Image (cartoon, rainbow, N blue to C red):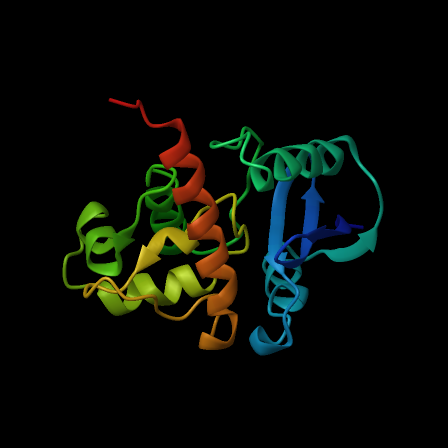
Length: 179
């Protein structure tokens, strides 16, 4: 049987569902009723797997790194990842990982980065399906006008995006060299 080992991580901004599939992280997704708990079906369906609550070394390391991130001690995650999605989605998620900590990019910037400058809507759709929130930093993507736009499948979760960006910008500013 193909199994995704899962556990819930109670972050300061809400619960995240973590999932370890064959030693790779496949889930770090917000458990929000506004997104219909999308990961609960999308990732297992894509991997033809069932979810089972368990503790694994990878999930323990993920929790440790998330804890360090949320207190401002970690800027880049070092975890084996498997983005369960289409090749296009995976190209978008890879581009998201290139956005520096504490910096934002627009959907248009991401479309250009993957060589598809007219694909802004498709990029937004791929970002909406990112199963590795925080670690693959979709929260760093904002509207072309500089405004916050939907997060995790809807505008009801914008407060999470707002808090993550505020954390990163505060940490980045405190680490900036003083003149």
